[in-house]
Length: 287
Image (cartoon, rainbow, N blue to C red):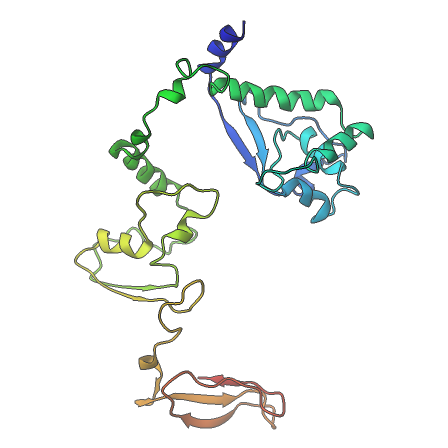
């Protein structure tokens, strides 16, 4: 009977949704009553929480008055699987709030049954209870994951998933640029592009590498601009600290004795201007 069930489920579509920190306006309807399992009609997957998101409903957002209420709200609103800490535990502190929620009447066992049904249905579809010779995913050669076809698909997804927040008509470029300035501490660092919850790709391309590949004939100048998450280079190159044709900066005293800006004169320096507080509490600013 189990083989027949797994055979019929295996050919259906599996989908997974991850919900981040729930907010009060997404949990409660206008009438103030909690709805039950508001998952889109026909959805055949399961919903997981972001790590510590359920605990945050009580601990961080203070939406509920107690911790057991948080998982009760989450399950009733459609969550099936909670990620508490992302690591294995040696006690039951991850399950205890659910047990307490049932004991206090905040959660029904039938609510938990809905989540369990969806989770175990997904496991059956994945062949986790089948012998290896019957599990279709066990026969996939790992080498296929890094195949040219999959690389092409990954590039297509990356191109189509980008969101342009603002465009004043500059893009798309009418012709290939011959000079490009790239400013930003992470332009040559591909790791931040991966975010987290990620695997380790065999090959990554930074923003800077991508521009060099796309425009091989362009003169590309890169400046980190700041040391944020990057210890390479200086925040402002010394060669740019010039004023009136001379090396250095001009400093102004903001909020001086007469309530205005007093010019202190040009100060020659091989490095950055010193920013400090004078005895009157006014801050020196480089100009």
